[in-house]
Image (cartoon, rainbow over all chains, first blue to last red; front, side, top):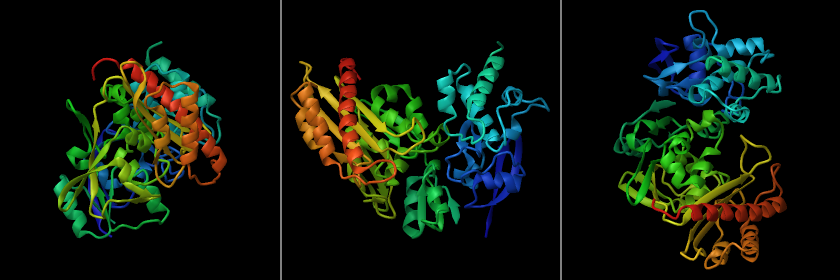
Length: 158
Length: 289
């Protein structure tokens, strides 16, 4: 099948890759770009494990056709750390044990970043609603919510 | 499958006229799960989001114009729109997660044809009209006339919705939408109820529209509830009539999310509550647009 040539800025780098037209962005990122952070949980937009940001908006990459991102700017979990230093969200997830099996974690980190970009001081309720599209079958969510609260505090310099 | 992103309405309609097996999409939040489930296998995927009119919001003195592929997140984030149509804005904001909100659209929610589509009762009570493009130009159809049954619309294969027109909210008017789901987020409506009222100078109800979702093959209006409200205030007797009428028009399915009896009961309760919220909002909108 014919493959389309796609150019996008992925985690700050101009990136070129080939993908079949009906391929999801998730599969293109994993199989063509080699970024396996985003995970496929459900493939139908319900679980959030494949969350990435496209032009600063969080979305589930399993519902995006790869050619849609021509010219777009994409952030995956691999782009969160800065020069080897973990993002405060990543550090707080680690320190707060906000993960167990880890499959959902890249999606949670991206969704949490999208929340904090818009709302640096969210309430617990706002955090829980913002993360409603991310399913975790291990942690029971409490540690995740607390890690996001802690990261938000750090990022506000408190 | 071939992906094409036309940049104009004309380009899209001519593409659809010449491609018998084309699927238009906006956020693809319903299209992708259907493809994955093997329920459709189009040869051409037509992405409508690169057409400027389809992703835009504008208002003039008479109406709002909302592009059919505009992400529903834009409707909730636009303070002028959500202030004027809180019910429609909240209904659109109930569709899925933040991730879905950045992709889902009024056009997709309507054309997917789900009886439980949250934005549809809210569009219907506000008298929204769909501007539909086809090979012979555009036509305008009430949103209430678009869906003909579960997954079925009155659109031809070479037609798609360009935008929605919603007349500006008059003074002393308000809208509301409530949905019942067994959890707080991320579920499909068991019952949805939309209401819109306009109050007379003396505070009585001058105009009322009530519409229900998820209780029949399509969204349904509740004419007996509307008739009970007009000329009255929301006293107990009137509200009982609203609830009874709402339960009465239901023709729901029995499934794991709700039995027929439960859906009928809840439809009455939600219709009543939605009317009360719409009235409260109408009382606060005494001033200009």
